[in-house]
Image (cartoon, rainbow over all chains, first blue to last red; front, side, top):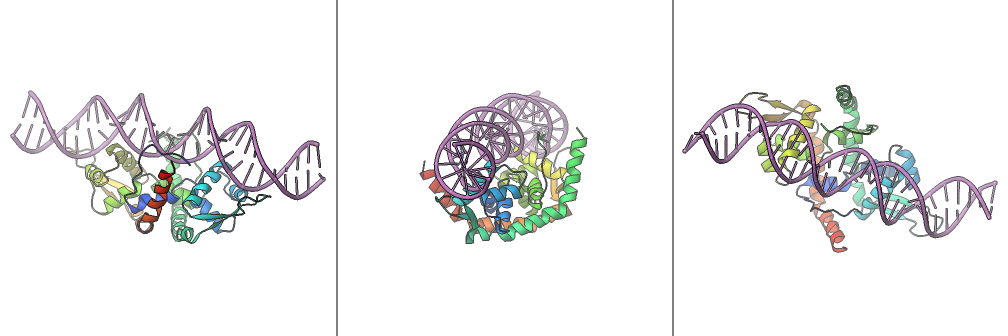
Length: 120
Length: 120
DNA sequence: ACCGATACCGAATCTTTTTTCGGTTATTAC
DNA sequence: GTAATAACCGAAAAAAGATTCGGTATCGGT
């Protein structure tokens, strides 16, 4: 896991929450697992624009913080399956709300995004 | 505003939402404004661990995406006041939930954090 | 006239995060 | 026995994001 050079201030709830699920793909991964897509390659296939490596890295972080757990540790053939822990499941209501908000305002945000592009 | 080199995929609600309020200090700034702390220096003082510059930058982004609006445009003495737009206010329920989640799980996260430190 | 406060901005320089790429191990399928 | 697939990992590089620092402009107080 990446070794920070500076101390991280977890002084408010928001910072704590973002520490756990603020990564670029973390909520997408949690969503996939919740939908029954439990193996790394399958998660990768379901999130086309993420690389497999970043999914591995973020899965390792989610594992470290106890959001997900892994079965099939060191046996072969390797068929790892990840699932949400009870702790991980407490994130689901937030995920639902955040995703819904984003979906509702998607067009508006994309429009503003395009205006930025045109200005250059 | 920062100029991306790669195309940003806003393919799911989560990505859209994080585009708007996923910045390191964005939700903290929105929270401050909501609490009536409306001027840049005051916001800075209320968020001790952020620099004034980053608050300015993120405020400009929130302004661009219509989350906040600014009064006292170009008059002197400069006493800018920021407030949430109706669009910005739609973020408040999420902010409340995220902050609450983080507060509830704060000790657990900090504990895991410390374990990481000790291992080095 | 000078100092301190406020509100900015630009640019260089970090730090952090993501990507790219190559490698390992072991199984199944042909 | 060779190829394909799966599940990783390490390290370098690139990209994104945050910080530092110095600058401008204007006001109000002394």
